[in-house]
Amino acid sequence: MRAASLPFLFAITLFVADTALAQGGRGRGRAEEIQNRVGAFFTDSKGPMPDGDKAGDLATVDLVRAAAGAGQPTVLYLVDSSDDQDVRDQFERTLFAGDEIGIQLRCFHCGRIDLKSEPLLAAKFAKLAPLFVVFDKDGKAGEVIGMSGYKPAVKALETQLIKAAQGVVKPSLAAFAKDYGGLVRDLEQALAKTKNAKERLAKAGGDKAKKAEVEKDLTALEKEQQKLLDREVELLGKMGLPERSAEAKRLGGRRDRGEQGGRGGNGG
Image (cartoon, rainbow, N blue to C red; front, side, top):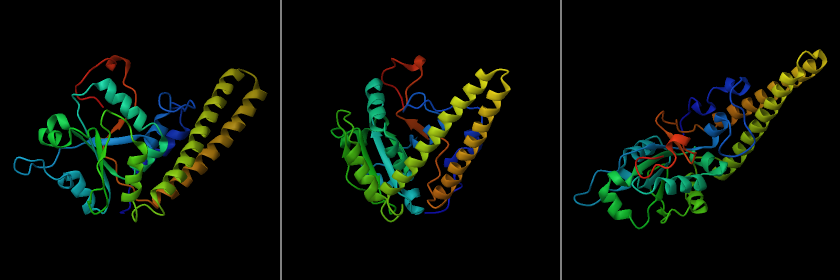
């Protein structure tokens, strides 16, 4: 795979700045720096050109063709936005709950196709949707992973991802997800320790001895974080990950309070 500019690092300095810090849990409350590393990001894509009065081949989707031209794999997610949004949201939260699946998807170009706007595709895949199709670096499609009834099938998706990444992600996609996942957990713990230390510093008030002790801890934590970030640069530098589109949206998160209760429409 080609070398990337490592946009996945998302401004290393954020890790030592006074930004939102991790709160230890998964999903809601996690720092954006962590979410950006383990979240499932998809870019809205158009379906293939029709083949007469039938749906075209998904392998001809622009995203798939462009990725194959660069020797990179792709994932297409086909879902109907006219279905109940609460159901879709819960499905995506469950499917993308684990860090590992998000890290694995980071090695792919990920596109989401709205079947509401693609009647020919909807007619072809109605019984299987929502569904995923994974393409290898040559644009060859694997098995269609149907999740009819919005029943998440994480293992089935991971199996296809690992298969499609063979020869591209080395030594393997599973090994990369494990190594990088461990690094992200260490970073998250370091952020939590920093948050705790800053709270202690605020409570120290005018106690010079306590302040000096906490400041010493913060200096050590900053060095720990930098070592982890250096490891991240080294690890990702070897991968040449696909560049994430600026239009990519993280799926599986919770909607803002003002969006709760909305049905149908173009959620996600």
